[in-house]
Length: 224
Image (cartoon, rainbow, N blue to C red; front, side, top):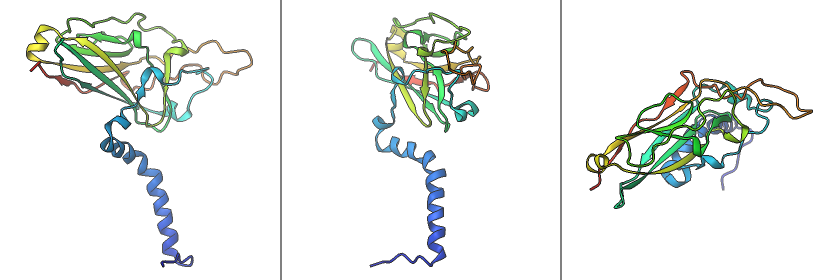
């Protein structure tokens, strides 16, 4: 039987190196390992089920406020079925170690043939689908209701799926899809409840250096 030699300095150094490995390497490697093990486990919860912000002007993650460009967007496109419909899935990942707020409203997510330069999430589909295009119902407000601001935790993913009806050109020749998230303001704070001190004067939404992040374009295969 092997015994731990408490007087051996190499054992102590080994423990320290193991702790360093866990703290600094595991957060970067674990998501990829889980993704390889099971894509379903890494897909993330629905974005609409993320916790809604409460008193966000008063309570925000300090690490989240320091995050720069923490969001990564990824799209996947399913096959066009016999009815001419296909499902496009958007995945939103927070790559930072802080909780970040994102504006996500299912009924205010743009489906467009080109970037319409509006704030929030949007998906660009080319050529334009036969059904499914929609404009933003409330473009670029100065402040957002806290029920429309969702909290994406450290290293967390969320996902959202949409179904569209492919056009004749897409069925015959295929197409492309990409996504954006744009936010050019921090968001004016909401009035605070009585007795709650104001810590931050904004909603902490302005963390994109260029104001916008795009996903890579994905191919939509023509109908076989």
